Image (tube, rainbow over all chains, first blue to last red; front, top):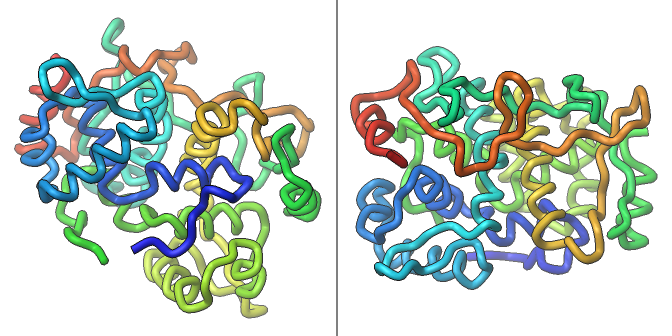
Length: 156
Length: 156
């Protein structure tokens, strides 16, 4: 099913996709973010086959993204909940480019104030929104020589 | 290879994953965001088999995410470039949870000011960072009855 392991790639996106880059996996995490805990509820709400669900949950457990709860359900760890911004950014893209006519099926809000959330954009440390074309890449402290060369030759 | 089409799901995340939720696809988009255009460069830099690369590029073209350039290469459309925040959010998660010890392989910066980018977080419209546990969901204008019921029963 899989062709190459991304484990050896010096790239945080590749390593992340190795864990969560499968259709169902991010939907399971979405359901868990929405509060689902019981196996049967994941099964029913996602329409996912039981054997696939079992395998995906096992993998998320192995990677410390989800944890088995006392009552027999599954919950997100801090590592799992930390995927919420990425889930929200992918949802927003679907809202913008796939559900543009009907409008978003789901809206996120702040439970404390009932206010909507800010759009997820690339911003400077000062908070200014940047268009994608204005964002450059450079090698970070974890870059291998190959990544460093790649970053130096990127975009120009 | 695929089990269920997500096309009929009333969920912007599911519909997005239907297009980009495959290991290689988001890495191809990453490479394109970093400036790669030529088929051979995608092939070499990602280590992706030619037949898979061809199929993925075709799919991205069909969905208006990438476009064939005059010179024979491939470029991102506005729809494609709009995936940058989602790519950055997934990268950030990998930086935080997989490359925490070594540090990020790649850093993003503002080409105009050379400044680093802000972290991608969930924020209120006022710009305040929200922890994932404080974010609720509710039905939006594009919600079907089923989604509306799901949102009403979420989280509590």
